[in-house]
Length: 386
Image (cartoon, rainbow, N blue to C red; front, side, top):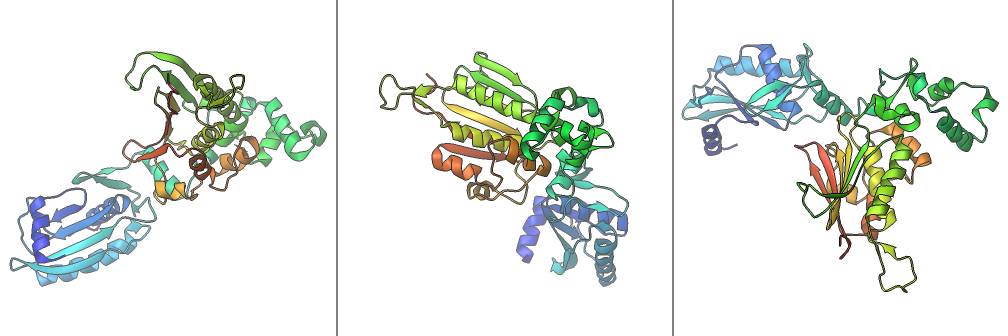
């Protein structure tokens, strides 16, 4: 960074990527600054500058001491360790030390005292438990569908549903094996300590929403094109296990979308205005890839001119919308995903979005990182909403 650019940057003041320090003498304080930048988008610490932007400078002894401190704190006081870069510059005849902390690739980071912080404007704040869970999830250190649902029990298992699955998958009934449902669920890694995991509850639970109310689909067919509209044609809270939710959500699509003649004979059934396979692919994608750490339902909104499928959770940091358009995916819920291959129209090879776009190109994607949601918008065929 050139001296001119450094002066311009200091003149702009502190923000989420720039922090001013007149001097640094405390290891714990420096560790928290490094952790905050690592857990966000990275940034620069300007040492030798007051909070108001006044350049005070550092002595040569200060420079040596702080450089050693940076090295020690980055390796011994930040978990996992980071590698910040330092640079000494002379500005207006005074020496400054710039500490460049990159956005971390092994989030979340914490101090050696177990403090998790991130940037919030020019300041820093403690990371909430929900945020921390999502950071661990993005780092693939924890998965929501593997966690225990503590208010659940073996009594929540739908034994008939489990029995049908077992017989179809293994060619014999549970009674033939003389295994109780709880043992089968344990063998399938869907229970722990006589409690259902989230995957176990959503896949084979009797009434999953009694334990996890937000794990459902809220579907509304609006009159008009505005989310603020007060009139609707159809509305349903779709509940049940993941197979039931998929089936009933598809039923909601089928009864609220039109069939178009498309130059076919009068006595033909007609074509669904949006191909069924497109809706199946996008709905399955929402059910198995949503962020279950976020306590919110999936939303299906049908407007006169479009359909929206809104899933809780942004895309993982490692992939983009362009990635998913080319078949690249990251598994967020590995247990649910492994069973979805057997229970839903899902291949598990990252090709669903590709197939949907090939079949019906009028689909747009929005990865809203601020609102923590992923939205799919499907333009309805001409006349579809009339």
